[in-house]
Length: 610
Image (cartoon, rainbow, N blue to C red; front, side, top):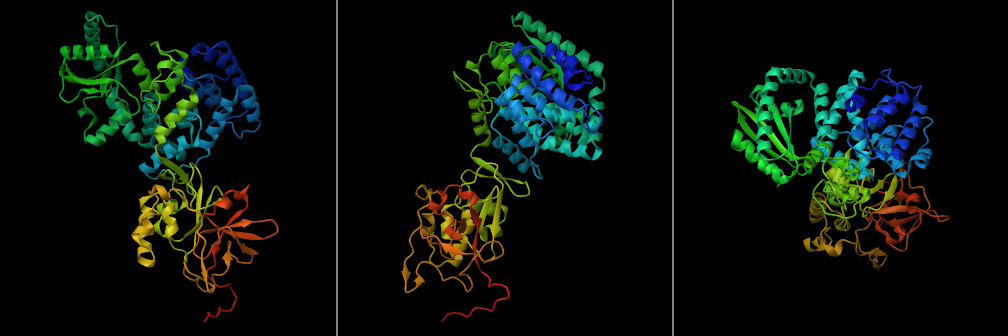
């Protein structure tokens, strides 16, 4: 019934569908069922007359998404958000009404899903795809946003045949690059496996059909072989007084395809296309059972793996062994029901355990799927703590920002626009004069924040400065700046640069501007401004009422920004001026500014001073 609801729903009567939902997913309380029913009827009232381009009712996709979430044991808020996951911006849909009626959490998930949906994904390399996956975590405040989006992608892949032919391969490639690895990172092997197989079906249909035929070959013969092996295990376990469940499974197509490519072998040469899984009650029984299996059949050398003592990074635990059964290699996995639920549902099983719906007696007090599913002891685990810790584990010490074109750039935490510019290209970093974050000018010393869109402005006459060494975090930016200064600045020394190095604890906090001494009308600590640089250029002109801030006294060569004052024109500050940062609403009243390095057009050349 569960599979029928989430994969083959063609019924359109709203009452029939919600009744079927309640009969299939019985873990929800009566109050939760009432809320879910109300959400479904609200969705249906908005979409009942709308069809998708394929001709199917609009409401069926969100209904199937909600079913997928319910199958994973997610809470009622997730299911309700599944109904509305694509409704942000939909004519007639009122997010405020949804928040008032169904709660703040539901509205937050809907908003977070809309944010991801609007993300332009340009995954040109595997490294960039990994950065995008991390970016998704940086963008959201509730892990359920990712789970809802995974359910959305899974249902779309199941129904991808109804999409336009030119869209199928593109969607499938995005799923294999972004969403399937994301499911794997969250330990959701059932979602990962299905996404991978469906993606292969559309990205490489010839290989998919070939593998399908190979797996289907002699199906009845393999069924007899596996049935005999299962009976042997049941008898041995019964004699040992261990209650077990033994199931058979075939390797999924994408896994076979990857192993064929990696080992340069045909599918017939791979000996782990079939496997048995043994489910028992305790870890101790797992180890006893592997001994019983090895007594039944000879184990193959090097094919035993203990993922119970040494779990995988995503929390996966199981014992793996391969034995020679009737002359054929047979892979056997042994795990507890608790381990199996984590292996299948991963992070989603957090809510499953909280509801106590799995076969083990698991409570939130002994939940062990925190920090990317690694074991953690806690007496009071909230969803907020749960997400915050798994998010910190997945993101590490990195931040993820966008270029204006939508590409994702990964940088160390604390990086500035200078680091960003050098990451894009050395020439951009060398000529950087100012930067914007989300359309607002920012000091070049300001640490960037996750998900900001960073735009840098350059000037061919600009060059690196000693001051920049105290702002940068990346080795590339630091090395390029230091190399330029050593070559072009006679006053620069390694010691002078070292004390400003971004890794120096003393230099971690920008120093206040140093007052500049004047001698006979000239500045002693900088080179004179080139001819024509007495003016400030903003955009393409210098025709502004300009004055220099006395608090930081900017001079030629400093990174500067313009502050739009009331009645005094534009006041020029150094970009690292601390007073500027404390002005209320400063981000809306600052402009990118640079020293003018070209004479005004149609103006006579300036005479050099004697």
